Picture 1 (tube, helix red, strand yellow):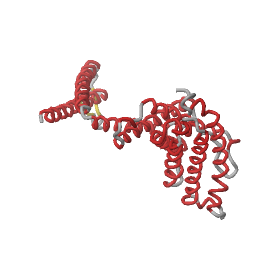
Picture 2 (cartoon, one colour):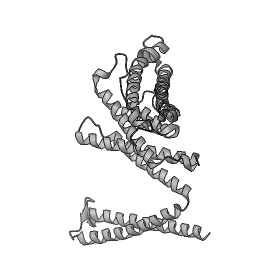
Picture 3 (cartoon, one colour):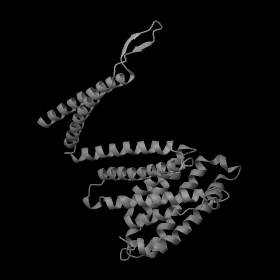
Picture 4 (cartoon, one colour):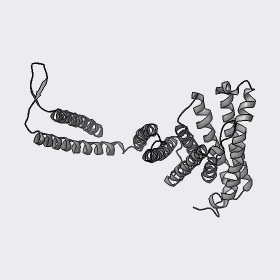
Length: 332
């Protein structure tokens, strides 16, 4: 009961201090405009000629003093809330979500083709979005899974963010090179390569989080959607399935089973292909130009680029298995 009373008192004091900061800021705003001492016959404002430097400095000092008190109260409030581990997770999720929203906004406002510095800002925002989405999903999963042994470590999260970022880079490169675009649509890409390697290294749970994260970021980098259903069938579900399913083969693959590596790539690629094909049939039948929509979506549009991308990913995953997947020989 006493702790509850302290918390209420702390929140009330924090609110009052915020009111003080707001009031002082409004006073500073009025000083910046000048002190009105009268009006002309035309009702125009007449401002005082006195120097306002001293009052401005004094008001700024008052704002800083109260701001310090607000920060101290916020620290106390956070410490109080963090005594409960569940509250700690809620706070972290909220803060990461706010951070993510800000970075999504900056992703939208920086056109990367206009200026080199815009490109840097876009890249940093993209990196921030990948990492924050990964951390949010890890916290959400921690509510569901209670076993200590299955918790995802910071090392795994960091690795997932790096592999997701690499997949984004490979995807963007494929879109920038016209020669990689296929006649009926889609483009050859090695973006699945880091996704498969991560799933085979880290298993189903971490793989699902990373795949979902990549799906969200891939959606953001594409910058547009023609149908709401495409969000799920072309981005979120296929990439989550791709990495999660490859994670099902992780144990055998890490023991050195080449067969498991091959099955992981083929089944993961097939599931992604099926989701894209269904997306075309369900949401984009108007683009078939009179052709059978199933034939157009599954054969003409999605099969060529998916087959080439899957085959290339399989070759490279096999080549890199010894260094990145097999436990006895892989780089830690």
